[in-house]
Length: 372
Image (cartoon, rainbow, N blue to C red):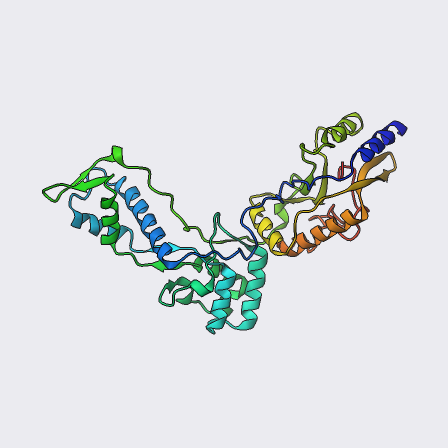
């Protein structure tokens, strides 16, 4: 036991500051920005360019399925486009801004809007490469999908309205089929019009269709059920292998920790937790950043001991300042996550005791595997 303590003391002396730990769920370089994403200048003329590009890509995909029935004249090509690409929908708006717009237009009551915003703040997740156009740049004559056919909010409830807004935070662009076909022909890759006015196709010259842009809506995470919380998942901070102290910590654990092969050196924030299929990492990242929380360093400058009668658990403890930061992180996480199925993220489903989360009793409810 003395040798074990001395080894830990040596590590403690060698560590002045731990680098900001890279968490499995909370990545220091999280994409997506703030929960209400930074608004992006995206002029309506660019909307149209993207809409035409998306329409061309869809038309090329459709031609790939035509086989021998390819349109052989420009007029037939235009008729095909009219049937297959009637309009282009672009998701360019933060649902929270959409709710504010609905409230300003008296399409939703203020108290309902507040409830909807609360659901969006905790459950809405932006798609990859999301764009949020500032309201000052919205053209007055655009066809905004949320301003049409709004169901009775009282019938949907706040959560239902939030889900509906995520699906409708888009603008519908009306792009003439003739313009799409002309743009495709002007590229002079897939096909061209011969002297007789017939279309000649050359698939070998056709570049891969451009990737569709701004086609994915915001998603809405569902409530967490008791069965979603599993012991194989944890919300935690692990010690990066790039940290100068990593090898020393691992050597001590290899010599003295029976769980060395089972766990990496880590600090549990919430355990047990949910699988990534239930609660997305990107959603947590966005909402955590929106709360104003920033990356921070952790200093481990003390040794803690848990006495489990037959065994003792020795672990590195955070400084007072780092402990305060960890508590704040835990509080912010609880505030931005969907409610726990038990009503308390420190209490595991089916248990009458607290789980291993970092609540106000940080350091008192750890278990042998908690902080290694």
